[in-house]
Image 1 (cartoon, rainbow over the protein chains, first blue to last red):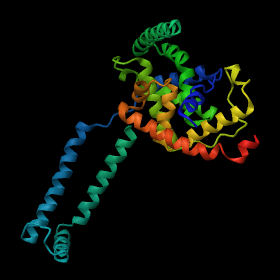
Image 2: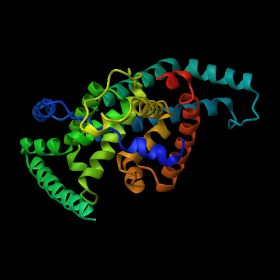
Image 3: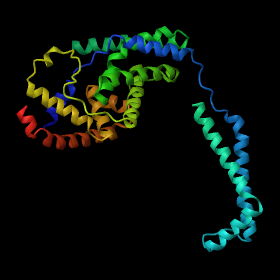
Length: 117
Length: 199
């Protein structure tokens, strides 16, 4: 089939006539929308200190792990030894609880953002 | 020539009316939105129909497009025509709606209400072929299908169609060309099937 023939068929597609109640149905929805209060936007200004705290805590954990290992973490470090150090540090600082709290905070922030949209 | 002049004058009248209605809506007069719906209901429903091939769903999608337009009316910056902004918003919504719930195959007996009576006089074979061609467009991969639909909906105005999809003209032309190529290959088999020959 040639382009001209395709053009001819697809250009003369029949027009649908919207049903008679379409305009009133749209306007009903618009009026409902106009009386609904707008969604509350996420309070980023208030969340920023919390987020800064979250990032700071993560940085502190990483720094503590590095200090415990006694040398900067490099890609050449043998993996099992590195894991052992991380585990020891994590146990000493109750990092499991800290991690759980951070994850919970993160999940709550995500949920709030989703609800605010 | 005279026809295009009338069309341009009509577009100008629409543009003025759109601008005035938008200003009134933004000032708090919700009822002014009805003018916008009256003027653009047919293009928006038809564009949705070309995307999904289902009358009921087309009206639902067009209603949602109007609602989104109402919500985002203050986002129209007036540097482009209101219709361009509205079509871009609608096309974007229809694309995401169809990606969320793909269109179903259109039953052959579910023909839309016709406005153009000359189409009724067309031969049965031509009608079948046309229906197969349109069905094949709906079966194209989304990015090519969208390009083809917008191209013909915007009366082969490439820049307008590209704007509605938010694509650079070059990218749009490439998709159009590839879409036509896939369509032609598809139709080579579909139109040669014994079923159509029997019809």
